[in-house]
Length: 254
Image (cartoon, rainbow, N blue to C red; front, side):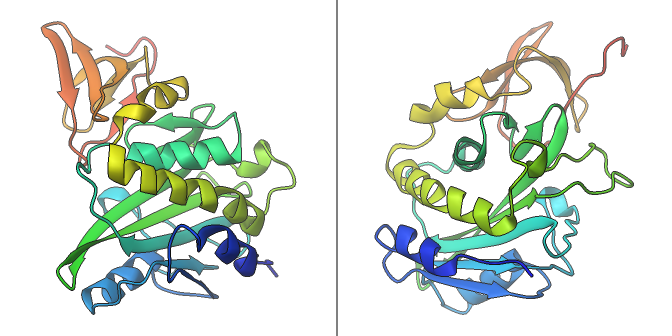
């Protein structure tokens, strides 16, 4: 049975988020879906919803995210949120998670956590309007223990590869305060102050990449709004669509 340090998380986070609550459910369809339902029903209290198991978990672009009890950390955070500019939010969240968990975690634009070209986790951001205010729901999934690679486009990594004693509860306690502080800072300042720190962990920078919509070029890093800088024969191009997937191009690929 997983031990969840709910009280410790509440004590660390509630000074930054008045009214903050922590819920842990043994099973749910999707933590993001549940918090989006609540937001649309007018429930705007800052809420951390942890799901020990998700039956219909999902990632960006509707991809499924399956989780087994103890093998993964899957949770969503809902809070009223009104940044001056939403651009780069997924990068800021990824940076907060990576910096709080381990120095060996890299970031793949726009929303993945990678370890040695294997996927450790992903981020899903959704927004709703509740009571005339903007509400954001941030879903994060992280592999704690090794998982099978069958059916996955990118081989999976596990947090225990880097932190052998890691558990879902310990990882959540370690990352939540940093995540909330980063969200508060981003709301006021945007992504630009985080650009240099992101590039330290950028796994695509300097590599040949290709996108899901057919573009190819060299990744040059990210701009001050978090857009991917892609160098092509005709010059530099900025990619800022959250609907585009980017992958490194294998060597010797024509």
